Length: 123
Image: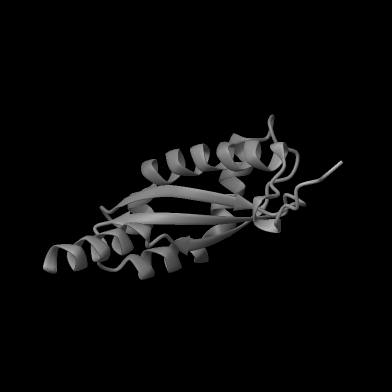
């Protein structure tokens, strides 16, 4: 019997996947409703949530439009990570026993795509 070798990056459990999708949905709704407190008129989208195997840490990738000052917005949200975590605790208390710690990162994949398109159009 041959077993396929899997890398660590693809070894997400079903539980991790379910929790990450739930957090993505709830964080997205929360940041859209109270985003003015963090971003002042910018649109914040949660693109990806990656959760650790022990469900203790969640890496949250945010896309911010318009992009000017996006790093500052992520920094403001990171400073209020405790507030965001407590809000998620109130929202998800019947679905999750422990709310993970949040680490927020800027998702620059759209900027990367735009840059590639610009380079291809210049040729």
